[in-house]
Image 1: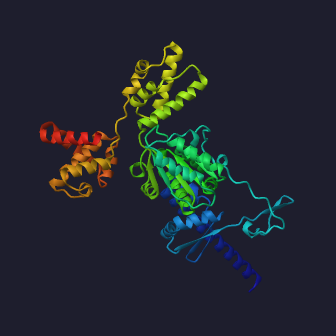
Image 2 (image 1 turned 180 degrees about the horizontal axis):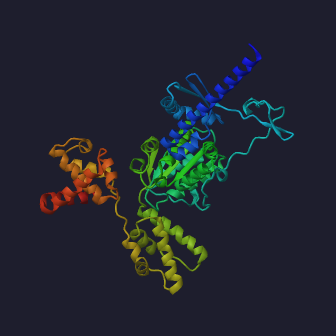
Image 3 (image 1 turned 120 degrees about the vertical axis):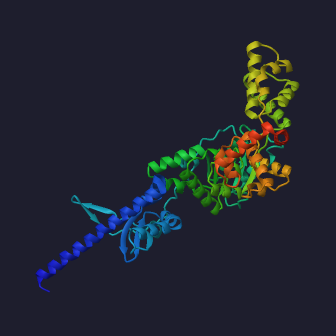
Length: 488
């Protein structure tokens, strides 16, 4: 071929390759835009932003990522969807292949960047001398919430209401590195002020003493750290650090908000459970009742051991009061509460441990500010408003459904079904009405708990029964009877 024709052929070939490159760049830009729109900014930033299109060869798009972890995660969760988006944008591309790229180091010489051969991956380098191992990550570097040194097993008081939860937490805390995992995940639920946080932090303190890597996080702290890592583009480092621990403790799970955050916590939970690493979770309700939490996450939590810390019994309340009085005496030697006063306070202040703390503080204030001796009569005056604060019973929707079904001689499955016979419709409407009257659940939440019904169906049922009880005395008596049964 003459030299002029050879030069022209080379120019045409270079132009063709340039066109292919521009075309491929445009295709990848279109795919990226669709992934960002479909999954949202948080997920896109977390998983897709570091994907790079290396080349397209035939029907295969070759993508690269910087770490094996990212490659494994994208292959497991998103590769099929990425391939589908490619095919929708360009029917010739039907598959994707994801590899780990190795950065080529730059050698700067005389103001120019000269690219040298890529270095082998770290796993393939065999140093001539042993390198020091990096320190094990501790809770502070992982971003754990601070622990209160006072909240230990030594200061945790047990009774009938919390004995099971205490025993399970103690067994986990006393386990040694490498011991088999017994209860995973352990889920502890209780109302406010019954000692959940104390028990969790006591577990964290004791487990750290065994040499394990422990992280205690509130749900709010988990959300804050995860969102911050997304903004700083360090989400992968956050995930990898969190999954390198031996024991993860999450408090107040009911406050975990946001679909992306819940999905990430679910992925972390799955990773730890699959790796036989211990997880403890606490919330104010059982997993099945956490309405704002993703259903898959609730299901995974329900697969572990769920224990309730019930209301403090009178004996335990008296024990707590004696401990609080002794602590107050350390700062105020003249302060003391006779046994009959402690017995009275334990009998009438029933809500939670925080109210017991408030009761001791009020007795101390009346004693030190007025000089009056602490008697039952003085306690009656000082604690008048606390005594009136009797915590109402928490009624569960499942309990409403069960009691209503038994009263009307139908099954709970009938109430949740789509059957529309009168023998089922009326009990279903009564149960929905009671759920609205006796719980704090919203209409959409109640609808979901009644077989996934729309909130307008619940609203219709509530209005229907509300109108009937005003004119139908028999139904009014039935509803009042059911209320008493549920509130007793």
